[in-house]
Amino acid sequence: MSLGRSIDHWGTNPGDAIDAALKAIEFALQELLATDPAYWRTEQKKDLLERLEKLQAQQAALKLRVLATAGDIAQETGAKDASGWMRAELLVDKGAARSQIKLAAGVAKYDLVAAGLAEGAVSLGKARVITRALDKIETNPLTSGEDLILAEKLLVDYATQLTANELRIVGKRIPCEVDPVRFEDAEAKALLAEEERAQQKTALRVWDNHDGTVGFDGVLPVSVGMRFKRLVEAWAQPRKQKLVGKGAPLPPWERLMGQGFSRLLETIDPAALPRHGGDATTINVVISLEELRKDLGIATLGYDETNGATISAAEARRMACNATIIPWVLGVGW
Image (cartoon, rainbow, N blue to C red; front, top):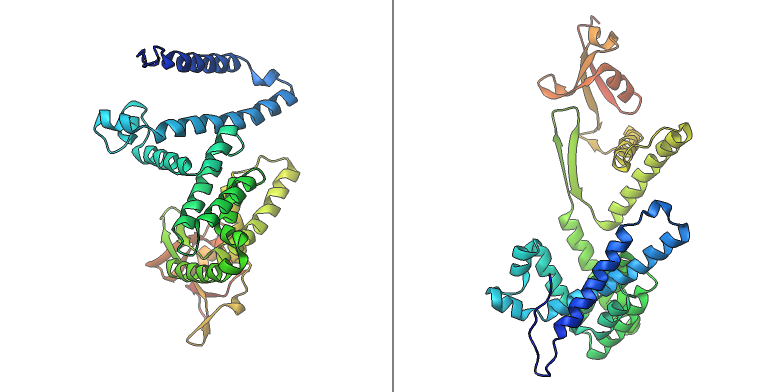
């Protein structure tokens, strides 16, 4: 799509230079896409990936500069901002478009972030992290303009050493680096408040999918959630290593994690479980003697045959090795 051909008051057409630059970029990309990386040397691949990372940041800087001045596009389309035009013409979801416009406005406020993007030293993802952190500092009644300036400098410097996720973690604590004496107490109070909110948000939902599986989802406080993640990973990794040792193809990591979670639950000592009304937590398995003796028998997991899930006799026998079970064996004369 070529740019307009209007002449400015100097008698020149800036659109010609912009159009020529865009065509040169498009041509260079087409040249690269016409080659097969399978035949490239390793150093060439590494060099391209490194330079593309920088180019992507510079491309983002240019796009955000344009979006920050896209008020005329909004006026022309009668929209609140340019997101309506982006949705209609570029097929960008409106939420994503508005997020880009918001980021453009944020980057325009912070000169060092904008310069880092333009130089390719700060990626788009890191720019988003930094502007969010700086916006929080700006609205903090304890901070000053000098704090904001120093925080921006520190975060842009950190962006050259950390990943976006690491930078996000540092961004939460950046006021303490600016002035430890003034902000450490405030950070401690903020953490306590965050932990209290996390406790209020903690939830777990479990449901029967009626296909031999149980579904669940939930929210945990970060301290508990990270411990849970590490414990499950500890049980998933040995299985992964066994499969690698046998030369078997690895299943998806999500499946290994699910299997690891299952094994973690099976290692819980029933004697360590909470007691209800003086009795240890138990599992009721209902099975007939005939079914118990079968290799392919069926048992009911629950309180009775009408209020529980069905499992195989083999699974019931396996569970008996890892849990306190009350067996309801039907058809046995005592």
